[in-house]
Length: 133
Image (tube, one colour):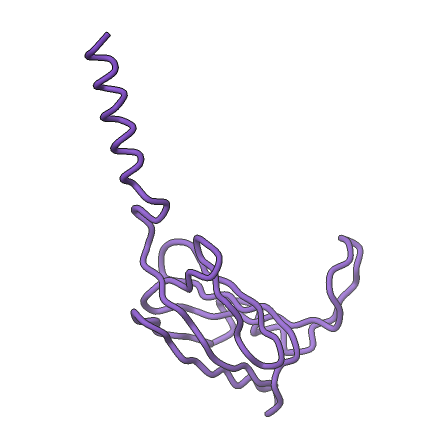
C-alpha cells in the first residue's frame, strides 16, 4: 500500500511539473500591417504555415494584424520560415449556405500560390504585406 501511494505521488509530481507548453514548438509574437492596392485591408484572416508542425492564425482589422495563435490564445506563430496566406471576404459567414466573394485575389488564400513569406525569430516580429492584383 505504501509503495502504491509513493508511485501515485511520483506520477502526480511529474504531471504537475509538465506545463501545457511542454514539447510544443517555440512561437513568437507578430505585429504588422496588410494593405491591398495601397489601402489598409478592412478585415481578413491570416495564417502562418511553418515547414513542419501546426500553423498559427489571427485576424486582420483596419489593416493591422491582431493577436496570433498557434497553441494557446495569443502565443504567436511558429519560429522559422513560414508561408503566409491571407483571406478577406465581402461579408462574414452566417451559415454554411452564405455566398461570399473574395475582396482580394484568391491566390493569397493558398499557401502554394500566395508567394507571401515571413522568417519568424524569437521576440516580436514586425511584418508588412502589400497585396496587389
